[in-house]
Image: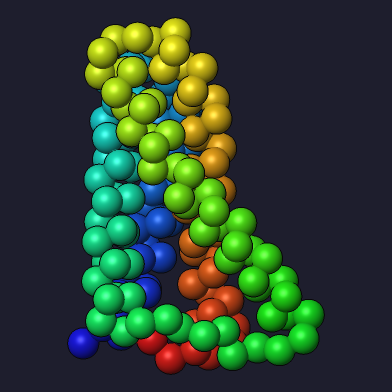
Length: 141
């Protein structure tokens, strides 16, 4: 029942990366309407990812990394940085959105300079974690 959720999570993370990059592209060209659409869509994609992630782990529990040696250490280091920054990105995104919604664009811009690269890192490493865990090392979803 839940076996498809990790792939769906990776798809939502990939979509989030594409939307974030497109949003950055548009704001650099002063296309605020397209930037807003991309960024709100990135939030929606991230919320859908989170819903799938929480559902999967509620029903399935923890998925152990089956590799050993240096691969296990590298995977756990990647997962650790991903997890810590994933927790940090939620309030950053909310504050960044709030400042834009309130039309406080100077303070929005200041925090967005931190939010964007962290959000990109979290979304990209989410896809890498998925591929390493389920494809390179064959964990069962």
